[in-house]
Length: 192
Length: 179
Ligand code: HEM
Ligand code: HEM
Image (cartoon, rainbow over all chains, first blue to last red; front, side, top):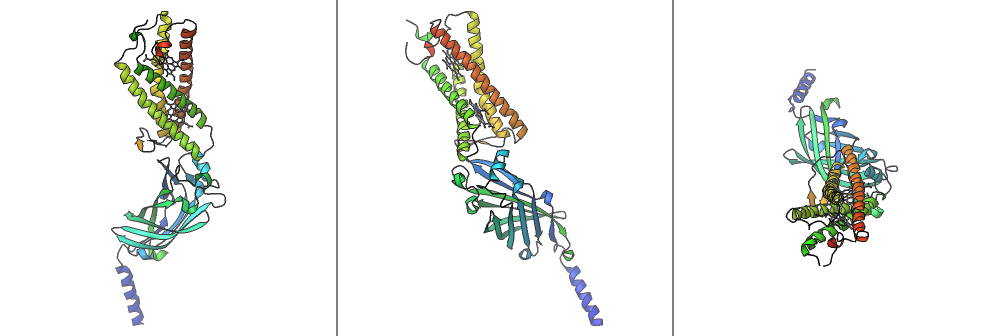
């Protein structure tokens, strides 16, 4: 009995002694989260974005290796710079949005690079193809929110985004710069 | 028979006809390209149109700067109203040669498509992306082009009238060649 009480007290002490940053950011704020991209046509940089994306994240800066992230992007929400472009990229040659309405990313691992910089590796699926993807990102705590900012280059040909007459990179470049900005509020780890 | 000062100088002639050719080219391409379905070719033609337009803008800057230091030859004798009309049209044509490329540039910026001259030299966007403003500027760009067409028709019509009906030197002194 005494032993048990002692054990519970020790456990409680251990729990309360946990450093303050042992906080998990896992309540994604959809309205503040955005996937933006920049593509080049005729060497002209054009900005675009996806308006909606469903995301779930569990990230504790003290334990990055335990972090998980998955993102779902509603491709129909694309803003590719103009209405004409939006209609075009929904077509079969680009995203074939009817057959493949969503792009998904599921993380495999996160590692710390130091200085609030991290790197996430995972599986990126677009248009029925799944490939490994890696992106560095930074983490910042703003009040009770965790802010993740990262960027990577996606080669559109890897996913057959832009086939047929668009396959050539002379007009629309292969490299698409992707930027993600994810905001997740902290929730007590115990309440998971 | 005529003094050489009664004719446009070869620089004035070269600039006039080069610009006329370029303007007809940009105009024709402009009207042609907008109806095309979206394709890599369409994007290429749009870029070429913008590059040609910027080139014409540079050319009119050059032409105007040169013109400030060089008076045209004394007018061919003609009724005062005709000379006034001709001069008025010339002024408007100069104005349009500036205004059309400028509105094209601003429209492109407002539509969110920067102009990168020949794919290498980015030309700054003076205004940010604003689709409504972009559509308005497109209407202005197109309207000014129709105005240009109408004025050039009057301008060339008058030149031909002087040449074939009045049989004076108006057109001849702007044509390439020596007499
Ligand atoms: C003197 C030079 C120029 C001429 C004569 C010219 C003429 C034209 C004409 C006739 C059109 C077709 C309008 C229509 O029917 O819809 C057009 C469209 C257009 N022009 Fe120009 N233009 C000139 C310069 C420029 C410049 C410098 C730019 C941009 C840097 C530009 C950008 C455009 C664009 C983007 C369109 C297509 C508008 C659209 O479809 O939304 N133009 N131009
Ligand atoms: C886009 C087409 C054209 C533009 C913008 C244009 C513009 C001009 C301008 C600004 C001048 C005055 C030059 C100066 O004094 O600085 C001029 C003169 C002249 N242009 Fe054009 N022009 C065009 C096409 C033509 C065509 C097609 C013809 C003939 C059929 C023509 C015949 C002449 C003649 C004869 C003069 C001399 C007029 C005089 O001596 O008073 N132009 N043009």
